[in-house]
Length: 379
Image (cartoon, rainbow, N blue to C red; front, side, top):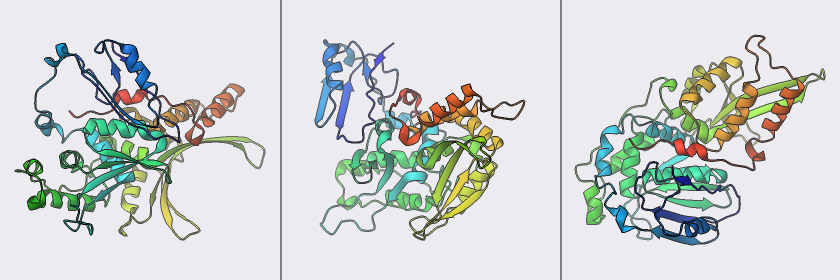
């Protein structure tokens, strides 16, 4: 069994740009994992370099001629084409993009500076979710990552032709919000690219390419990973443990999902929020801020709502750091007595509640990313 070294990247102040390529005998997991096998003559060199990934760019390539003959030579882009329809990766990414992503389609061939304009799909990640950002980039085998210092986030930018075609195929037919109109504009661009301004290698990628603009996915939310992608983008887990006016200790645990009332081009998000609320047996509320903007909120306000969500996330798990929040939240959820239908505030239960609450969201300082080992792959 290979030894896996994965450095937790939870710091708020760092600049890292790295890529580690290990050519190994058998690739048993996705390229997103840093796998250390008996490939390099001195394994301690690898361990040393992994430990100092900070403040500069580096590349480490370990080659062993004896292993080259074992590398697969089949055409991966062709082998995956028949499996894109049913890929849970596509549903998850669709939810992630509709929750916290942007689809940018150029309206002119060149910019005012004369540079060729490219379409792009961009996904925003909280700084602490940098490992997930890297994982998705490795799975797609393309794109670039930019750090937005002032916004405390990373942006995964997909704008190379090969990867944006792949990603578009993955998510086509899996959208559920009005962001599908942006996807259709992208498909129009991909079906009619500016050939005369492209290099020959780029032109080959569009040869015989034609993508149908598929309609919204109206299937049950319980059928695929779309909602887990949306929750990773805009969902949050909460535990409240306090005393009410009668000095009684009250414990509440719930999940909240929010979306702006209107998207960036003025379309309402009410339909998808109603669909999600019906699935979770809850209601949609509107929150109006002091600055005049507003958003829609869904909150799992009952045991039934939480039961439905737990059953769903058992089949289609989260993959951001919110998965860790969910596991802490689940500790409190499991304290509920199904026979008495009460969560008793016993000393042992209170200890679990406080410990879980203090370890969630912005309070978290330790991150374990082992769950990324089970992330979706291209079939």
